[in-house]
Length: 121
Image (cartoon, rainbow, N blue to C red; front, side, top):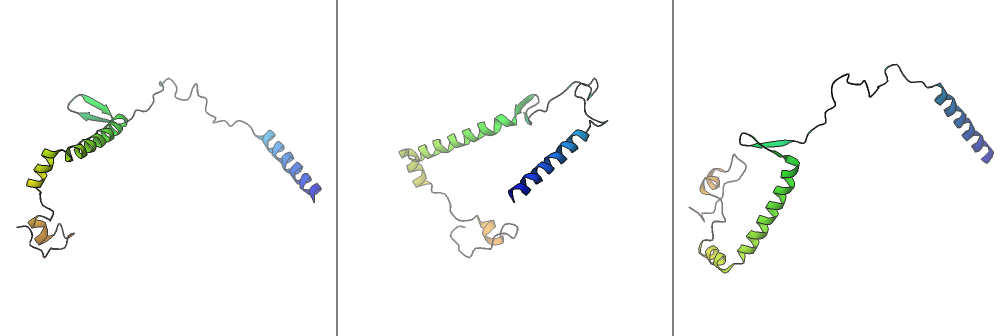
């Protein structure tokens, strides 16, 4: 059984060598020196966002910087939330926790069911 396995390997190797020796370079192979003729090589650029008339910013820098600014703003807001003057302001002005009147009565484009509670006027 092992001798047959070895002879199969030898046959496959001989066939691969025969195939490899019969391969040639095709007529339409790419020559990197003459590929584009006299057109100079150009590389792609990262996406940019324009602010104003002439200020362009690289989007690959804006995304991580924006993320860091967002995380910093959340950290500052959480820190301010524990400030006694901010706690008093929130206690005096708790805000509203229910939907506005136009959303309670009609729903928002049919996506919200009308509320039956009348907590807010």
